[in-house]
Length: 174
Image (cartoon, rainbow, N blue to C red):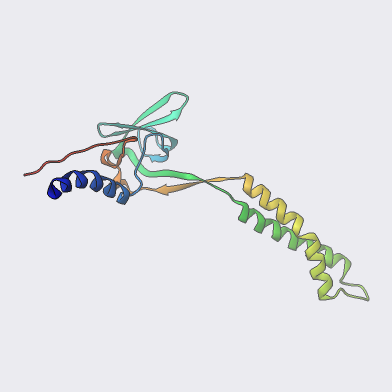
């Protein structure tokens, strides 16, 4: 009885373990950026629609479907989503605040009989810099950029496709 359970349990558990170990593969509907040599040289961005023999199907939107032979693809990238640029925006805003503080301080402090002290400069910076820093962070957060992952062309085969939904396979070897 115990041996009779080993095979069914192995058939159920083994495929899920193998799927969990698999790396992310290309899925239908994934956003792609391709650099193509011929017949229409240039960069194309669209969604992956599938394979047709040795060609990749790319949906360019509005019903336009391009059939691109794999040998014409020079660069292959998959979108991994969009990321925020709030940190970069805040850094730029902080730099703008520092420059504004330096300009205002030079206009008011130097060349007078009573030059500004260091604590007065820090106080001016603490009053001026927060506004451009926050504005920069907000602008950076609104300006999201897409993250692209380059896929080696050697991995560009129909076997890299993992279908959506439930897949059941059985291999019997003697």
